[in-house]
Length: 284
Image (tube, rainbow, N blue to C red; front, side):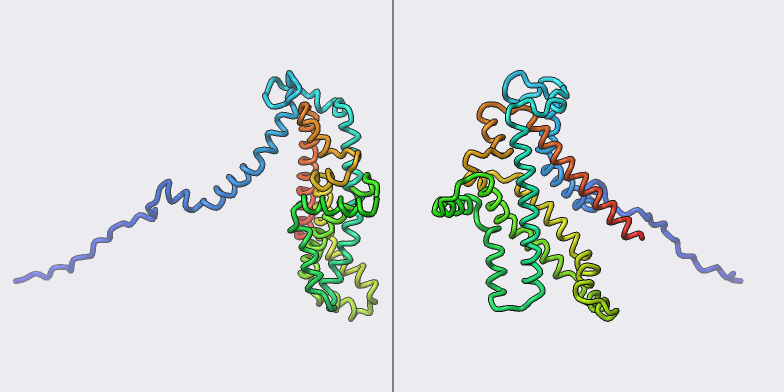
């Protein structure tokens, strides 16, 4: 008598949940953070060198080789003759040029972004021209203009030149902020019986303020750092970039590295504070 046999059960093969890969797959998944880190390292490597050599005590006039660690440059910042005067002048020029460029640039940005008028396209083109023009061309053109008008070169010509080339960057930055505003917010304020002045100061201006602050920082950096346009129109006035250029021919004191390190640290602190404030507002 034949006996019934149970049907054969299919054998389940355990599959590994671990996908094949290895170092190549690990790099492929993290290629963007790796490339971003390498680019940031490439960008900040000269700044790190400046910070490190600000603590160097060179044997001669040039601060190009590491000798020994010292904080003498940080404690005696004004030791090189004339450096603090040039630094003070650059700071004053940066502040004045920033104020002038921000006031004029904000007005121009509102005019171009909010109003339709004949020549609006040409105005947009003219705003970008100083940004696209080489600084040598702008500096020589301004020099020709001042010489033609028999205008004595000095503090006034430096200020006019700095406001002129910072103006375009302010207009572009503030105009981009204005273009990103939601017009319904201003309309809602009008619906709540706010007049145009109240709407501007209570709604529009606080929304545009981050763009104005960013444009101010950019304008100050451009003014403080400029050498080419300033060299054409400064006359006998010496700003900090011109002092660095002149000092590089005779020697580079470590105090120059100290000023560069301080400017970088202050800029970094401003960015970090802005990020903390923005995150707190987002959480609130």
